Length: 268
Ligand SMILES: [Zn+2]
Ligand SMILES: [Zn+2]
Image 1 (cartoon, helix red, strand yellow):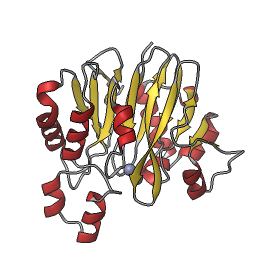
Image 2 (cartoon, protein in one colour; image 1 turned 180 degrees about the horizontal axis):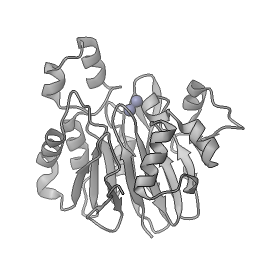
Image 3 (tube, helix red, strand yellow; image 1 turned 90 degrees about the vertical axis):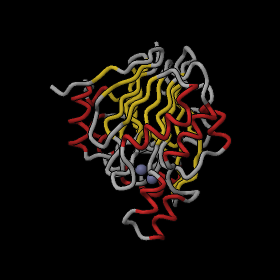
Image 4 (cartoon, helix red, strand yellow; image 1 turned 120 degrees about the horizontal axis):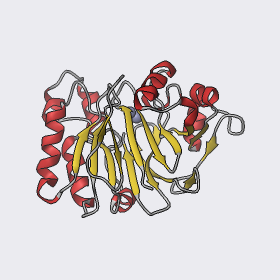
């Protein structure tokens, strides 16, 4: 069976990732405009009404943007936690279904996700660990200042990990942002640096980790080659799988658990 992971794009201007298994498709975050999301779904080869559910990790606009409109238009059930629902002012009966931290959400007989809380600014954000009925696991982890032990525990054993590598430390420190914003980004409730992403991956690395996607790269404080080289420096010797970067403009590829190489997506 396996789990498919397709990033429609990732960064501070929007995030959305399709997680699929056994014909069930779940969109993790819906931070682009509805029009953009539908355009990107089409490029990736998905009909909008084939999206069974939408999960919103937290209320920030780059993750929640068009989620409610998309769920109504496509007939997809919207899932989030209570804080996100209340910050978004979504109706708990009519508009969304809430989950608790570490409470498994079952989307089909094949596909479920475990929401794991992570520290992030004024948000109640979650990382998501998807599982299929064969025991394959894939993680989507963005928008966190550091990785709590619970997250490390659940990342260990994943076959695929998509994790943010938001900023290069030197670029952030020397860059144009005011000091207060620099402190917020690099603080406990901010974002992961390239180095932190590398350290986390090194800690959870195991023989069955097949693929890694680095995502949510800052366009001002990072660059794909910096993120990839810093992460590979941390894990290189011990990682035999494949690594890619999800950029703001996507989709460019899909990964499936059980295979190392990505399938590339070519816009028609
Ligand atoms: Zn974000
Ligand atoms: Zn955020």
